[in-house]
Structures are given as structure tokens and as C-alpha cells.
Length: 268
Image (cartoon, rainbow, N blue to C red; front, side, top):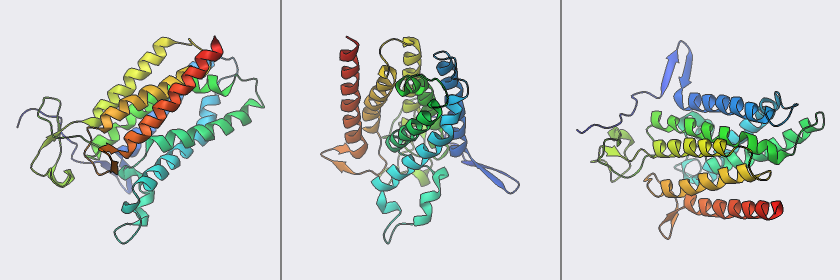
């Protein structure tokens, strides 16, 4: 076999009676990085910003996890409901299955209400400035979180024969692809894409009107996700040759583009 990225043999670490799932660990590390960077950027924008990002995260992070899980369950109901489903699997988020669209939307709503509550006690800038500050950190969290899929041997793409191909064990290969050994590491593509956008947004600094950075975060991520999604071969609902998440990405790109256009016009 040619050189390929190996899939870890285990997705969890057992320490006595405790089991640490690497998928969950990647999410925790990503959240910690997002809070650290978000706090640093927000404090640079306001004198009263210390601790605000962490306070908002107390509500936004759990809401994001719940939203991400709900999106996954709603879009793949056959895995959890009906004769072939298992309701208990809904709570096992360490096995994977967090839809980023649900995580972003529900997490942002929770952040909005939490931030407004905190803003009543402190003199804080608008919520749009807040989400601009935390946007790069969210991308870094997503980039780190994607490595959890590597440990779970999931969300890979079509068969690939290249030095950066991902070796997938036979038990994790989809039906019809059992004879292939290496595949596109779509988790790695998305992780690199997230880090690249984060670096771009940080380089842009505080240019533009409030909300521009967050809108660009949503726009660029959804744009990359559309193309990365086209490579994936895991089971998904499809219409006219496009996967469900690609249709969602198109709507998100349109919405973010409209938001940026509105912000641009208002600044002029």
C-alpha cells in the first residue's frame, strides 16, 4: 500500500471507570480555544469585555451542541426512529453527528439573549461587534472539532490514491466501497479551510461595519462546505444530484451575501 494517513485504532481512552472519547475531547479543546481568542479580540474592542465571552459561552455552547444534534437527528431520522432506529443513540454525541448549521443558528440565538442580559449590567458595544470578535475563534473550534471525525473514522470522501489519502478500516467503509482502502480526508480539507478563513478574518482586523466579519465567516465557510460536501460518500438525502447540506449551504451563502450587501450599503 502507498503512503496514506492512518485512521486511529481507537476513538476513546479508558482511565479506570472513566472513558474519554476523543470526539468529545476535540470539541472541548476547540471551545476552549474559541473562548480564549474571542476574549482577547473582544477585550481589544471594549474596556468592559473581560469575561464576557466566557459568560456567554456558558449558554451558547450547550445550546450549540443541542442545536447541532437536533439538526443531525431531524435530517437523518431513520437512524433514530422507526423499526430500524434507536432513540437512545440520540444522546450519544460522542459517536459523532453534530450538524454545524444547527449548532451555529441555535448557538447564536442563545448567545444573543445571553449577551443582551449581560449588556444591561455593563456598557457593552452592539451584539454584532461581539460576534465579529468571536467569529475567528468559532472557525478554529470547528477546525479542531473536525479531527474528532478522524478518530471516529467517519465523514471521508470518495476513493483516492494520493499521499494525503486517508486509510479507512474495512468495518467503516460504506456499502459498495468495501474493496477500496484509501479515501479523500474531507475532515482534513474542512479543518484546513476553517483555519484559513480564521487567519483571513484576523488579518482583516476591524475593517468594515459591525457584522461584516461574522457575515464573511458564514459566507466563506458555507462556500467551502458546499464543495467539500460534494466529495463525501456517507449516506445523505439527495435531490437532483446535490446533497441536503449542499442545498443548505446555497441558502446560507445567499443569506450571508445579502447581509454583507446590506452592511456595505449602510456604511456608504
